[in-house]
Every structure is written in C-alpha cells, then in structure tokens.
Length: 317
Image (cartoon, rainbow, N blue to C red; front, side, top):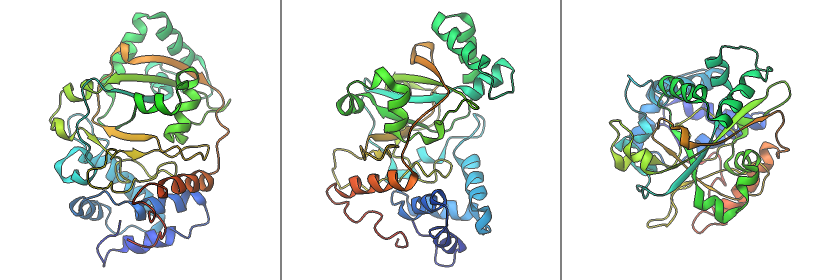
C-alpha cells in the first residue's frame, strides 16, 4: 500500500521498515504489503491519519480504528463491511458453514465481576465454573457482555479447514488455535492469567444478525487498517481471478507456515450455546520469534501459484 505522492506517511512507513525492533518492522511491512484495499479506502485512511510524527503513527492508526472500525452500536457500521471495501469482501458463506474463534474473556470477567487485579484468578475461575455448571450467572454474564460490546469485526476460521489440517485440534484448542490462527496477543503468564473461550456457530448467525450491513458484505479478508497494528498478522495477497480460496491467511506462531484461512465478519451477539469451552491459562507457547514466524509464513505464501513476488520488496508498492 502506497499513499499519495505528497503524503508524509510514505516516508514514515519507509523509516519504520528499518526500525531496530522486529515488531516495529513487521507492522510497517504489513502496511507496505497490503494490496486488498480500494483507492477510496486508502485515501480516507490517509486523510484521517493526517501528518503524524513517526513516533505517533501507531496512535493515529489506533484513532482511525476507534473511529471507523471498532464502533459503538449507536455510531454506524465498520468501514470494512461497506461496498468501498470491495477488493477484500468475500463471497457470502453457506448458512450452515461452521465458524470458530477464540475470545479473551479475562477483561470482561474482571469488569463484570468487579475485580481489578489481573493476577487474581478468582474472576476467571468464577466465570469458568459458572459456564461449566450452566448457571444463571453465566447467562447473565453473557447478556451483560453482549450489551456492552462494540461492533468491532470478529476474526474467525472455518471449522472444516481446521479439521482438514489438524483433526485433533479440539483436544488442545487453547494451544492449537492461537498457534494456527496467529493469536499472539493471547499470551498468558502466572502474573497475567487469561480466560479463553472457544466459540463455534454457523455462518447463518452472521447473516441473520440485526444491523444495516448488506448480507453480501458481512464477510471479508482482514486488511491492515481493520484492526490495531499487529506483528502477528500478515496481509493476504490479492487472489487470482476465480480462485477457490480468497480468504486471508493466518500466521502460524510456531513458524510452520500452515496458512489457515482467516476472515473477519460482522459482529454477532453470542448465545450460551456458542460457548463450547472455557479454560484459564497461566502459560502459553513456546512460540517462534516474530522474524522466524513471518519468514515461514512468507515462504509458504510465495509457494502458492501467482504469489511468488509477495513481500519480496518491502519498499515497493
């Protein structure tokens, strides 16, 4: 992705491509490698970001996401599900297609149950126990969460794709899904435990959810401006015309280059039956380094027909 010739954003991204920290370089690479954005969305993003100092670029990007993607329910629909995002929109999924995602429930448990110590397991364990007992407390928790959540896009994968790649993923989903789906932000430690939930539901839920988004626009390949800057994400190349698979491709955190299909879809409100399991983690990994996982991902991408040149020249367009 290149901005208009006079935009200072081009120089800012170029400078970040030579940053010392691999995470900073990865975020700049994602911007430069993004190829599934229409000119109108790039121009809008550029206008919203303005002329930030290089140090403030991530802040400006975050402001764009807050104002145009992670929207409150009374402020419109995310830009990624508008007609202007046509290059990244996906064909409508069959209603019966099963989707899966992992939710980090840690913050919600602390917020709803009223505690504020992230190292305290009581909120997470209370949530897990409420779920496993099928109590009214869990139903009430889910209702409060649904009412408070914003309309940010939901990252998801196709159950059938995971079943084909790793048939036993359900037995250790709390390890397998973060690894396969590039969920590096879900790291846990003794000092910061996490409550993770396995969510599974049919695509019909996305299609039937109330909202003004055209049903034909409710699924998309994620682009770099549809979420906060993230070194564990990599934009997907433009698929060949008529290609069977046009989803995004998730970065494998263990540098295995598995290329699991990923998408974002319009927000849904959860039902109790969507929650298949909850675990409380105090450790994760081991995962590869950011440079190693991204190198493996690029190698796998470039092995696909027509994608040999993807990301070869980070300073190119």
